[in-house]
Every structure is written in structure tokens, then in C-alpha cells.
Image (cartoon, rainbow, N blue to C red; front, side, top):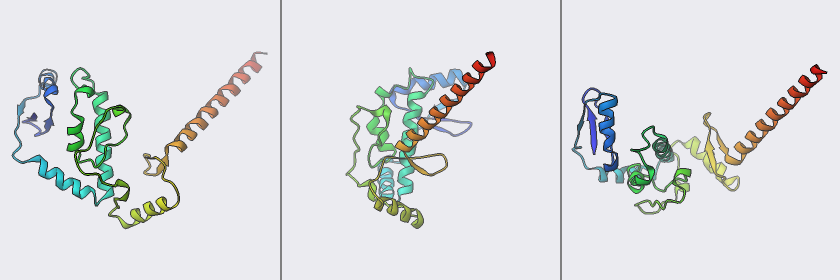
Length: 189
């Protein structure tokens, strides 16, 4: 179901199991909502978008990030009684984000989610920006590709380096606490 607000024109796409959220919004937010029927067909648009994703890595990465953000939002929403991940049509969500493969997300571990399109080698998708593509190819040639994470600064860091950095921080903190407690003990003597 699609619900819209008259005042803002915002659209809210809901699965049948989530329709009680409309009542929740009407009561808690006093939002005037009405059902909306789209006047376009969705499936041809997803096929076109999926084709665009196979030619633009930046666009592909954005679709993956959007999907991961949605899954994290869905599992952490304050209305957990309404938004249940086990009742969510994950295949439909994957289809709606036009994903070429299902990203590895801890929340989906053990769930057999399949992509409804032909297999695409996502490692071969190039960036449209020539400088970024050149850097990506250089990273690929330099050795085996590790699982990578994009930090807030935009740099790509491996998960193992993140773990090492966290371990160093914990060691420094423990060392500072030990020195502080030793100084306190000396002052008591």
C-alpha cells in the first residue's frame, strides 16, 4: 500500500503487515493520511535502473548503501511490533533497490535471499569517473582484495585494520588507567 500526506506530499510505501503503522501515525502524529495509487508501472523502471547499475559503480555502491541503511533502520525502528524483519518480503526489498547481488548484512545472516535477475560480476562494474576507476584497478592489481569498509572520511579501510586500531585504543586506555591507579596509590603512601 502507498500512503501520502496532503500537507507535505510525502509517500510512504508499506507492506500489508505494516498497515497498522498508518493508524499509529494518525493517532500519535495527527497526520492526515490517504491511500495513493501510483499511475506508473514499477517493474520496467527497475529493469532500466538495474541496467544503469551495471555500467556505473558509484550508482551501484549507492544502491547497496541505501539497502543496508534500510535494513538497519527496519531492525532498529521504535515500532518493533509493526516492523518485523521476519515478516518482511526481503526478495521484494532487494528487487526494489535494484540490487545485482544481496550484500552481506549481519541482520540477514541465515536468510536465503536471492536476487531475481541474472548474475552479474559486480567486481567488473567500472566507475564512470576515470580517476576513481584507475585507482580501483590499481588496487585490484596490487593483490588480493580484502573486505573493505568506507569510513566517514571516504577512505577505504580493511576490516582487519579497523580491528587493529580498536585493539590499540583499548591497550592505550588500559595503560592510562593503570598509570593513573599507580599514581593514586603512590599519593596515598
